[in-house]
Length: 353
Image 1 (tube, rainbow, N blue to C red):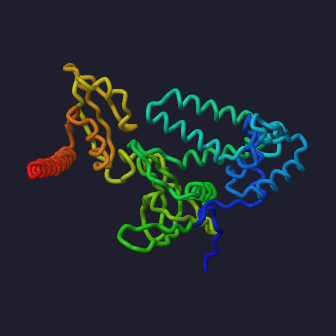
Image 2 (spheres, rainbow, N blue to C red):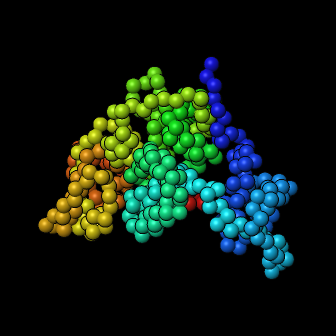
Image 3 (spheres, one colour):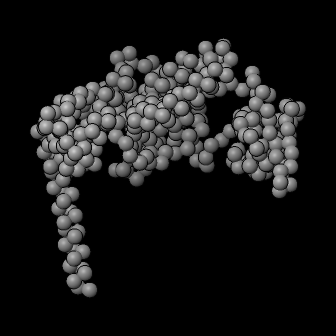
């Protein structure tokens, strides 16, 4: 029998112990300029007003410097000076890693200014940490940064269940086995699987990169299909021959297949725009004499490449490989046929009216 520790991803939302609630409230009260009312405290902590009162009273007893005043509407507000938390609450490694991951995502989208601001915030947070706390946190920050990749294809993101990401990050950082309840589209009941989590890939859908003991290769698990995650009271050793960055670099997006040499040619109308895109880290771009732009890279993930090239319409053609060009042509034909049939049906319906 395997013992497991119940993680925060449970039905009914996030659960916090009283001490954690106190720390969360202290951070909120120190992080606001205008202070918080009791109702706002209750909302932030997702608790009732009576519980918020008890937590506030506990903080007043712990921090005599808690300040309060009545606002213009005669509603009482409380605020805790940030200096009161120096040496009491330390910044979590996950918080710094999340900011730096967001900066990398902005870089991938070409949002250099936002990336610079996020890195400035990360540097500022590191600067206010105590030196010994920063020394302890830095290896965890590095590990989390290595474990969180960025897929190349942009797009909307599906909903991920509360607590899934935070629990997976803990498991990745602590090299702990997890039990996930995974919604399988071919089955009415979710499947329970024991996984060794290695990292996360973002972009479009989010994916967990994890290993199952009985399978030889890494597998991708859609984050929006993970219904819950529980930490097992059992660790694992990471494979020394696996690196998330190398794994994700094999593909245009997240789907893994044998890499192929891709050559694209963009028209002179959109060459300047296409030159600003990073299609893949291995890409090489060449400005041709006739004004067109050639982009070459090596990657797998033919389906995702085709999906992305659809967004360029007639401004791009696939020079090679032939298989990729045929796939794009076939999908374009299907899309044209379906929309042509829909248009005919619509016109027929109008004539009948």
